[in-house]
Image (tube, rainbow, N blue to C red; front, side):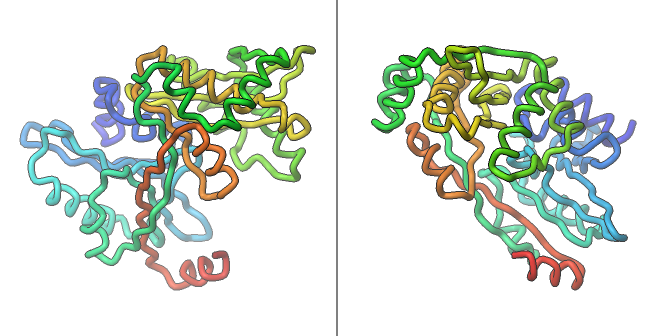
Length: 311
């Protein structure tokens, strides 16, 4: 049995594994042949830790990079494992044995980064915004929103905006691309990745597509929401730029939070943003900033030069 086959089987038996580290997720965002996984086994050949990774081969370079639409991959270690530091050291050795010209992954916030730093990996902090306790009452959660967001949500309701669920991943992709084109931007997600990911999440009962419709039944905002055993992720939000002041996006957030709460989830993760305007929007929903590390190492001078000119 290959590493991937073992990993697939293990994930099927362990729903507690975070969404972005699940085998089905890696397959959707990376393609069937463009990813692999490193395993650490115990004496009985059972998985006690793993590190999934996406492989990019371009112009003769071997790159291990973070997939799109994935907050973090990194190492998952079983709570039952002993000597976690030794396990991390083994994974670093396994990565070095792959000889990537560039390694760059986002790790969970709980990752022990000092071990990587001692091996000359560069550690940078990224951040997301999270509502940590969905067990609070809906009234309490709503009151934690800024006055401006409370007003936007009420305005959207008064203007007859409704939230509806849909299951067409193709329609969502088209609408997402249309909204980006309005602002002169391009959808960086290939249709194969975005559509496949939506379809697979819906099929597994781990996601939904939400639409905000005005009184004329016109779509003015949409959201692809996904979740795992504990957390809902505000993964792909989009909106009609001509309707940006309608309150539809705020109403979508509020509906998504209540949906996550109904499902018994503990947390709502806005998926973060390094852009201040977007981060400020998320902060207005009573969320707190959570940092997680970007770990990377460049092993080829040409890539160092390329990165220098593109930063």
